[in-house]
Image 1 (cartoon, rainbow, N blue to C red):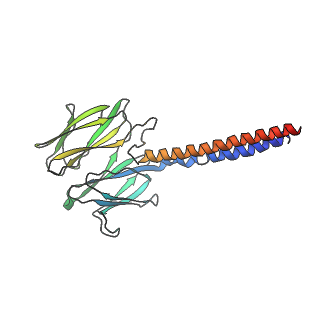
Image 2: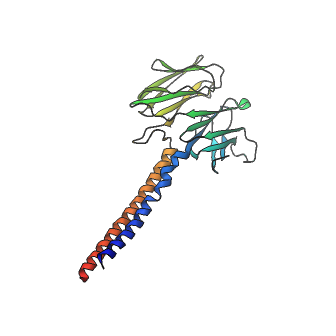
Image 3: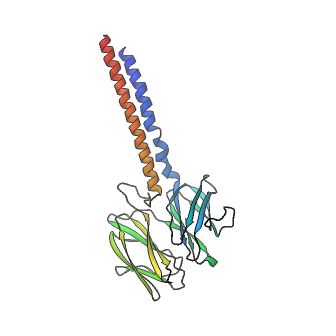
Length: 285
């Protein structure tokens, strides 16, 4: 086979292999520019478990659901296209056509994260869209804030290491994030004569929310929920809360690596084919 035909054959096979590697990467890399994140928090102590439905009003056609969300639960983040979404919560197991106990809407903005929170007693439920900050703290530091979801009229204060995170916070209050050094912190919470202490570990780069909840005895309890984390090379704004955005991106990266691996096999095959043609040509000569 002439050298020119040998080169042409190699070029065709190699180009096809490279196309398989490069083509799928574009949509995966472009996704974050038009994506945001939403989660829900059930913070009403006398409201039974609910089924949550989220339906796109604009910007997409997604319909998402979480069933049997109990008091104190904060869901994982949904990764969603930007747009407006209707959120409805119904008693667990109720018909999707029944009247929701809670209805609201949330706007998903590119790169932004929000928590749709339901506060208060069942007779007077209130919803609030809480904006979650994703900007990573400085090196070696973490951030923490307090979401005051206790329903008592007495305000709550939370301190750590003698420094106040929030003072005399009324119910539904969400404090600004406070930057602290990474490590183990003891949180002291007080509501009138009620006291509770909780120890939390904050790793460098983590951003956390501490929820103040009512306990079964009429006191208060603290629950830490991870909002965002710095995980080996993950850029600012990528979430690491179980099945949230980071898990989605990791799967995309795994898929891309699998595709690249298959492409590598094809490139190797192209090289092998070219080498075999070259040897055959030499043998004939």
